[in-house]
Image 1: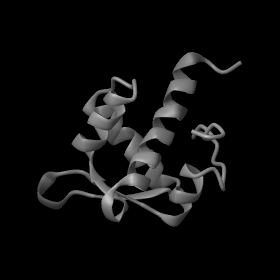
Image 2: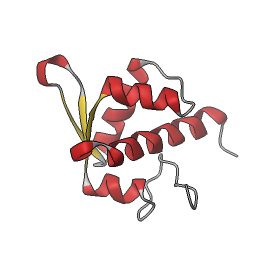
Image 3: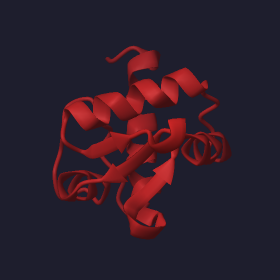
Image 4: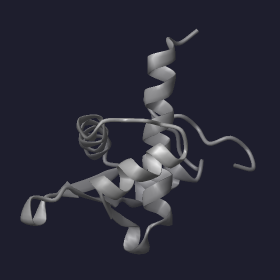
Length: 99
């Protein structure tokens, strides 16, 4: 059985990918993503969102940039595949059927 913190981290990464999948042009800033996480039950710090986004970028699931000091993430095709359950990546929860 995985530790609770690991399950929570994997689910939060999926939430971030799904938020980016729903966003206009598959892009969103870290503040908006943090608010979305809060809205779906993941109370998380700004540092944790930035860390998760960096991890997602390392895995090729998103890209990040900081125009004018604002962290912005963009979903990649691979990230969209994971968000929609067509691909699996260790460290990201799989979407539940019908969710």
